Image (tube, rainbow, N blue to C red):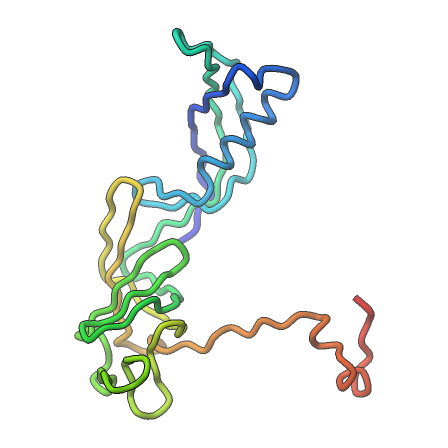
Length: 194
């Protein structure tokens, strides 16, 4: 689930950057250091804004300046029971690994519907129901998180595709206005120039 969270972090700045635009440099360094990282039990997706940058304090012995920065960030905290869309990375006879954004997810073969079977003779090896489901690297799946494990800077999840509306998910179509307004569609529709 996504949240807007107020956070605080200490940022150090080298003396060569001291000058008029120090606060901008501190904010830029904060964004570079923090966005996309795992902070224990949540991921920092994006920094919305900084609302408090303290005056710099010179650190003895190094000459670096330390600033305390208060900022608002969009964070994602996965919960048990949350349903996520993921892309399959690797597949083996025990299950498959997938990525749901920054979260690594494992779905065991025991947590799949009974009609889904391992097919080692296929190229590449895959899970399939011999009809319309094929789970191989690059497949989009919808899984329910049933367990989470966190460590410093990393998070893993165990998921299940055994349930209603879970499992194989069609890849979202990526269409753009320019692709839609080609010569064939221009005869049938009024397309604007992009």
